[in-house]
Image (cartoon, rainbow, N blue to C red; front, side, top):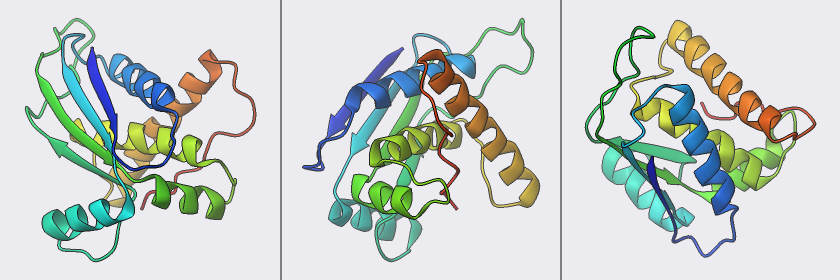
Length: 165
């Protein structure tokens, strides 16, 4: 799996954890090991510009996903996963820190960025949360991936509750 993490935000973030959880999520979703992903960490001004440009919404947001080859997880266990360029995930640590502080289960900016990375991966794979049933599926899968990753690393305490709306 080729995953690039570029921190252009000026904020110190745990880039290794972002890389690790992205790799874990892609493996769990059975994405081809030669697929490519880019994660960019930006400040709130850059995120606000992207949010306005692509979503026509004001203010910065927490995470944005820009799919490329529209890869999807294999439907059956014996299907060969497709290979390609997944796309870009853009994260904003300033928004992540605020969300982590305001979450019912308060957590760190880095924990929120890990959650948002998985959220971004799922968006790249075609998951969405516009409808209640889609939201339940996506957020359930997101929690399972984050919980699995945390368990493998022996991390204790509650996993971050979804703060993405």
